[in-house]
Length: 128
Image 1 (cartoon, rainbow, N blue to C red):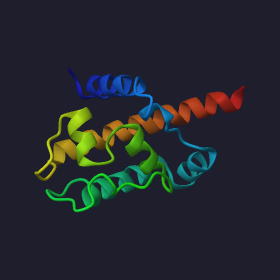
Image 2 (cartoon, rainbow, N blue to C red; image 1 turned 135 degrees about the horizontal axis):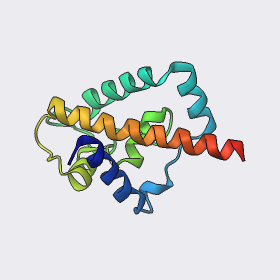
Image 3 (cartoon, helix red, strand yellow; image 1 turned 30 degrees about the vertical axis):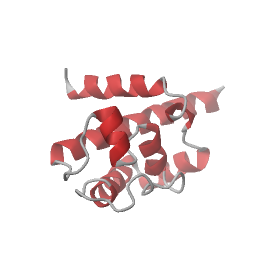
Image 4 (spheres, rainbow, N blue to C red; image 1 turned 120 degrees about the vertical axis):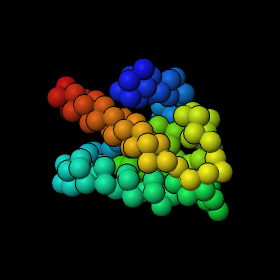
C-alpha cells in the first residue's frame, strides 16, 4: 500500500468516528491559511509534532493539544494525531519512544490531506 493510499484509508476510517467527524475548519481558519499559505501551515504542523508529540516522554500526554486556536490543532483532533494515546490507537504508533522522522512525515501527511479536504469542502459550501 502506498503512502497516499494509507493516508486515504485512515481518513476514511476516521470519518466513521462520531467524535473525530465533529471537527471542521471554520472560515477564520481558512482565511488564516490563505494568508499564511499551506507551506507555512505544514511548517507549523512539523513544529507542533516535534515539540508536543515526538518526545519519548510527554508529561501532559492527552492534554497537550488545544481544541482551537490554530488549524493544525483542529486537524490533530480530527485525524487522531493529537496525543500519543490516539496515535497508538488509530495509527498503531506505539507510546514510550521517540517518533521517527518517517512517522513525523506520515503524521504531517495525514494532517495536511485532511486540511486540503476541508478547504475543498468549505469552498464547495461557499459556492452554493
